[in-house]
Amino acid sequence: MTSSAGDGDYAAIFVNSTNIWKQLLNDEMLGVWRKSGPIPLTGLSGDVKIYISLKGTNDKNAEFKIKNIKFLNTNIDNDWDDDGVLNDSDNCPEISNSEQQDFDLDSSGDVCDPDDDNDFVLDDIDVCPNTVAPETVPTQTSGLGKNRWALLDATGEFTQAPPKQGRAGLFTTTATKGCSCEQIIVALNLGRGHIKKGCSTGAIEEWINLY
Image (cartoon, rainbow, N blue to C red; front, top):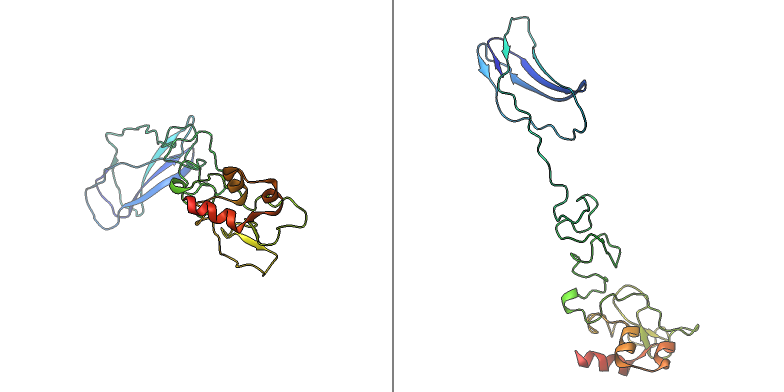
């Protein structure tokens, strides 16, 4: 864009009568000035009408010229991992995961979540993936049996019953390598008593000693 005279000269761009860009190109110089460079126009779709306006802010005569205008359609990559899910909705925008699996529902997809089940044990050292807390053990309506353990909340600490008669926090998912009581029961092929009442201290210690 070139102006041969005048100060306080503006350039503006309108798309379908809406001003989407405006810039003061010259506010002091009385004489010839030039302005060149790219102007990004984003968010356009369908057929649009683009108007370019050049305007002086004083009563002096001015001559404007516009040369070498090029409109480039640049496709912005809104799907970095090419999994068919746009970045704004992708729970792992940089790693392909078209199924968007998110076991712990923390908005970070399983393929990029370092701890899929939020058991405080990273996936690469987690012996029991997809741990659920609170767990289904114990199954008896009266709750945990005496000196039995289970994950009754999502703190990563096993609860011992009856309340206040055990050592709270003695066992954690970090110590069991991410395994809950019911997962330990299956792995060690323990009896129904553990399912009904919870894991015994000996059972959990046996599991910890394996790892």
